[in-house]
Amino acid sequence: MREEIAALWRRSLFLILSISLGQCCAQSAAQLNIVQSQAKEIEKYLEHGNISGLCDYSGFKYMGNLLQECKTPFVVRSIKGRIRPEYFDSWPDPVRPIFQLRAMEKGDRIFRAYGNKDGFFRMAYIPEGRYCFFICCDGFDDSVGIVFVNKHADPKNEIFVKMKILH
Image (cartoon, rainbow, N blue to C red; front, side):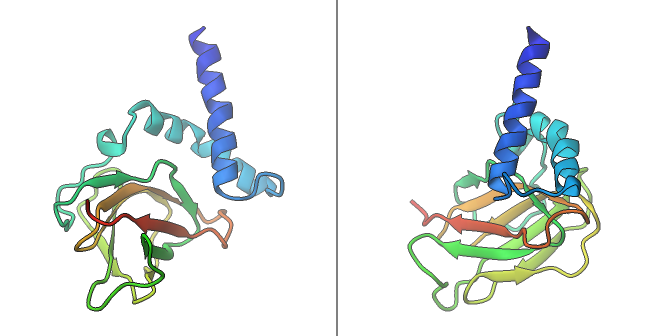
């Protein structure tokens, strides 16, 4: 029974990740292998129910706001994307989001990138691997999640997070 549930989870995770990547019907063989190879990692992530058990957020700059978890990990070739405020298209001056990244294996080094007025950010070369991210911005709930950097990922895949106004 336990094996059947685990198999069902793997199939569900594969479908969820495929849909979240927006490539349900048009995945290349390399994309399919990425999804399958990461299925066990994502399964472990979902077993915890939250990412707190997988990521240590000490050392990240934070605003002390509520944490919003991004439920689906991102699979990208490079670290780039957009952080948008809820209900707005751009960030009011002088507010800018901070995207922070650290290796999931509790690496010591924290990478940071500041979003521009429209929320776009990019990080220079980040090696392949599993990372925890933490996004903060004054007046908004902090966001946390997981990102897999893989050289075989679709180059169109980007990180996109919509931040909620502090309640």
